[in-house]
View 1 (tube, helix red, strand yellow):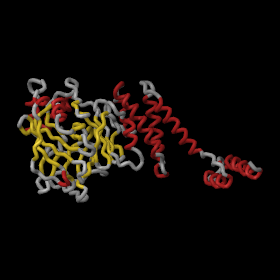
View 2 (cartoon, one colour):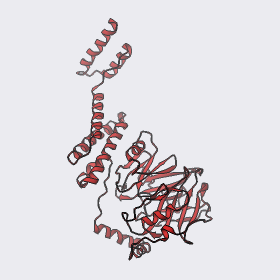
View 3 (cartoon, rainbow, N blue to C red):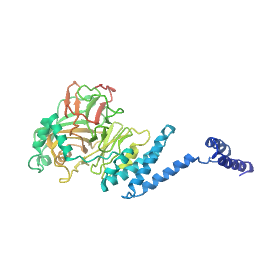
View 4 (cartoon, rainbow, N blue to C red):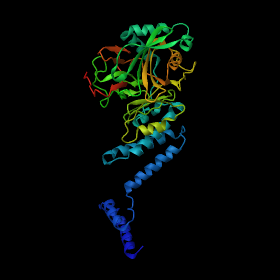
Amino acid sequence: MGDTQFSLVSLAIDAYVLARNSNVNFQQEAEKLAARVGVSAPKTQEADQVSLQRKEVARIGNLEPTQSNVRQNLTILLTILKDIYKKRNDGGDPALARECQLTAIKYVTFVYEKMNPEPFVDLASSLGIFIPTKVSRSQKATHVASQAVNNPGHTLGKIWENIGTTAHRPEYASGKVELAPTGNQLSDGVESYALILNGEKIGEVLMVPEKAAVSASYQVYSDQDYAGYNYGENTKDFILFTSANYSSNFVDNIPATLSIVDGVPRNLFVSPQMHGLVTVENGRPRVSNLKLNPPLPIISGALAPGSNISLFQSNLIVDGGHNVVPDQESSATRDKRRVLVTGTEPGRFGIVQVSSFVDLHELGNLVARLPNIGSAVNLDTGGCDLAGYRATNGSFTWLGDVNASSITLFGVRSNSNGPKLAAR
């Protein structure tokens, strides 16, 4: 290094010492000087702080959660996350924010599985992770009473079907399953079939071929998504729609499990009991088995800057063409069911509506025997049983409850007609 260049570097060091105790915009001046002498500008105090934050998030991420460290480490992550969002107008640091949230997911999962989650509910919600609370017996009774008033036929039918024996019925495991075209013509090539078991119609199947000019979408009831629009007989926007994952908080419109809409998180709680994860990207859904595919890398991709990926979590019913609902470990309650299916051919997906009352194991046996089915996840058909489709002749068919409402929605839109949202 020549004498002149050495003198300039020395000057830069002196300037750094002086600027730390003055109002000089040191970063700007140092960068000008660095450009002249060909050396990197020294870091500012703020840059040092970000570097320390990154190291702290990495340290916490490399630790195994324990009962003694979860609260402290979640608090540190929250503090860093608040600092990031405070600086959002100055550019923020979305990559570091994503690392904070992914690390927090791991810690909250530990809390949910190993500890009493109640003391952590507020802390977790500040990190975007809404832990579902247990429903008391009185709340369940109130819910059933409400359903009996609002939808007595379905409620009484459900009660009747669940009285007596709980043994699985053999026809759902070995009966003859057929699909018969209904003659209903849906837009853009969406196919409509009657679902027939041993010669009796028990439901409907709506399939979207690989090259159909439609786009799948996942939404949550909020100002950003589908609030203010009618997804019933007056809508012109959707060919087909259905409630998606389960809802836990109708006041704040928060899904009960993992939910991301076009890269924006709605709930980052990953339920350890639900192994089906639906990813909607470029207008097509795919299903992942969370027993085989860890969720954090998938969530990380969905939260990346500029992402248009949506995610939601639910019960996995079929995987690799096989029923994966354990015979004894899943709820034996019989109900009308609806599932989202993906085909063995890339890009093919659809909705299967089973209008007879079945339990989840029977449902898995039935759906796995449909032709060319790869995976299936259960959709919400409880108090949020909203679903229907429109044929090209304008006729509308309800698959769900005409009076129901839902805070989560899986829909199929036409690509050829453009958006035609009908206001409430």
